[in-house]
Length: 88
Image (cartoon, rainbow, N blue to C red; front, top):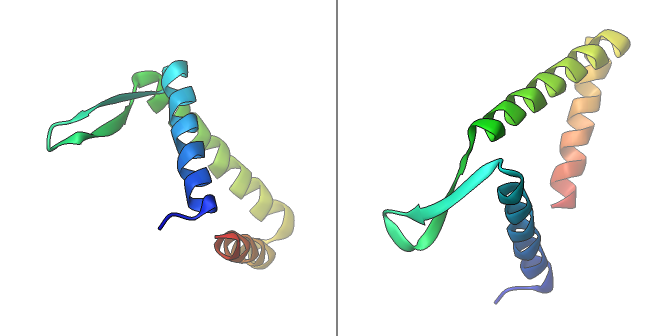
């Protein structure tokens, strides 16, 4: 049985995918192996956006490591990972 939280998450994901599709970042097509499912693939614009996000994330990680040092950087990353896992 789905909980309210599960249903809300599914709705949010569907809305997010719809917004991305409208922005031209993903294409949703029928799955050839499952007639009832859709597959989502990145468009060339979506690929460019993903690469830009990955570059930005990498640059932010480098900047943080340089600012606080490797030990504190690892501690921050570990604490953030733990918070995300705890939030579910």
